Image (tube, rainbow, N blue to C red):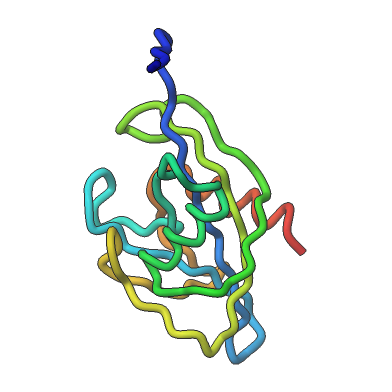
Length: 143
């Protein structure tokens, strides 16, 4: 028997804030350049939609690998973002994760990303969606 829920439901996404320390010991964050609308050509935190059969962590690991090529990064859930209007495609709730990357790991754009780049926290570009708020919260929460 199929159950039909008569109320609208939001989409759920995951976003991953990935840090590394560069050769000078300066903390950097990994961003992707979006290949698709909305915000095509804008910088964003890697992330995407949760598939029905995945846990949140599995979604985060899959999306990170698809968009950046990174695998084997320990990811930690730190906050949920759900303000209405945060995504022009519709009501979307995002569960945010963070992790650290070895400076020697190679990143490569794939899937929804046209480019990947490490940015100094002192020289960040304008970011898509509410990703500036996600990064700000990560910096408040993470050692």
